[in-house]
Amino acid sequence: MIEEAVEKFLMALEVNPKKHEALWCLGNAYTSQGFLYAEAKKAQEHFDQAAECFQKALAEDPTSEVYKKALEMTAKAPALHMELQRQLSQQSALQQISTTNEAPTASASGKGAEGGSDFYYDLAGWGILGLITVGWIFMSRSQTK
Image (cartoon, rainbow, N blue to C red):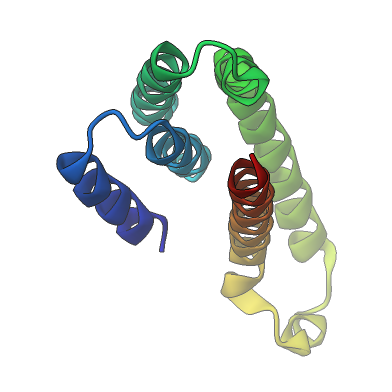
């Protein structure tokens, strides 16, 4: 889903490369994508792309506090990513210990091997909802000016 959004924003920027709203949205999509990767190097590539988009958006609209804050938050993304991965690792280890200690009949609860992936879907869902909300607010404010 995020990949599709990235493609659409890139297409919009082909039409108008100075469209700072599209640059900002693309940066948010790249940031969200970065958090979906467990590998720090791959995540960092997306965070770098996001920072580049936010810098370009800020160059087009230097007075935007939203773009300044987005650039600031993207600088913090690698540390947040590392902390998220650490917590996921701990959670996974605890689940393995818990599963090992449970009786075989207790594992028939329906979660099975796919239970751990629910966190990623929840994280992605909340991230996308946040992006849509912030984008909607930003667009509604730009319409009233």
